Amino acid sequence: MNLSPLIDELIESFRCLPGVGPKSAQRMALQLLERNRPGAARLSQALDTALASVGHCAQCRTLTEEPLCRVCSSDKRDDSLCCVVETPGDVYAIEQAGSYRGLYFVLMGHLSPIDGIGPDELGLDALFSRVESGKVKELIIACNPTIEGDATAYYIADNLKGQDIIVSRIAHGIPVGGELEYVDGGTLSHALAGRKRLAGGAQGE
Amino acid sequence: MNLSPLIDELIESFRCLPGVGPKSAQRMALQLLERNRPGAARLSQALDTALASVGHCAQCRTLTEEPLCRVCSSDKRDDSLCCVVETPGDVYAIEQAGSYRGLYFVLMGHLSPIDGIGPDELGLDALFSRVESGKVKELIIACNPTIEGDATAYYIADNLKGQDIIVSRIAHGIPVGGELEYVDGGTLSHALAGRKRLAGGAQGE
Image (cartoon, chains in turn cyan, purple):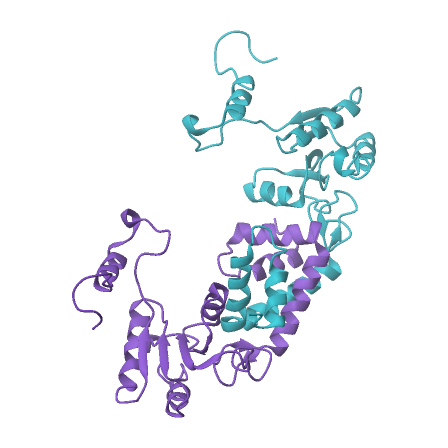
């Protein structure tokens, strides 16, 4: 029996959230209406405001309500470092880790010709001209270690050959706190291939 | 670094949803803004409409945008049966099971003196006067099998002693598809105490 079209529409609307199936959506809708109407009103208001105001940073393309995001417009960041990530969520993750002091460039995706996502969609022209302008000394590529992320990383590195700039990629290996026994084979291979010399022999490359 | 007050407010607003922690809330906010703005607009609209229109059914107290909910106003339901549940979510669950054809009464909670929830808050006067009006022949109590749910069930049954009405409680036992080995002790005790005779001896009670 169709109990209430308005509640059904609300349940259906919650399905747009990542990781929310029919049961969770129903629980969210009913719980808000039963017990937390101020919370529901606040959520609706926050959605409206964010939708109306949040756009992309003119320099790094991350999500922000200002013309330049707070990282790009800060004078406390090291503008000789630029970290290339796939999504604004990656920027949040790196900022929350708290050890990086450089700037970002957000691709808003990865190369995926099958979905029609090429260099133009990722704003790579803007990235390359930012590099050519000369401030950036090191470009740290932090694309995800997937096939598309790898392809994107190689494409960027390839296009910057011959430029006077270091292009690096963040390390892939065993997560801190992880146990070797439970780590998948691909990660182990990366960890072995990326091993670092601790002592003995000639130092460094 | 505080990246964006508007996005932070949106993330914080998502925390009002049940089962949503800081990481999920961040993922929801960023994913909607990056990839599904129409979905976000629809969610905001559905929240506003539901908040403005959804109230309680005058007869059974469930959530509905109409004066009487669709179950109470239907002429295809058996009005001699009334099922007492704690929340509108319980009504959804029973309706989705699809085998019940009677009406409901929604307590919107359970007796919990420590939280100030007594018989008045649960609308028990309305329930008792509905029983006294005479249409209901059987009251099926489907409160949750918790301490508070049990207390609520006993309170209702106790107050209806002497009335010409059957008061029953839904069965507690092994869930269909459950394995005996993995069922907790309380459920097993209930299942044993509530056993039904299949053959032999005198029939019935």
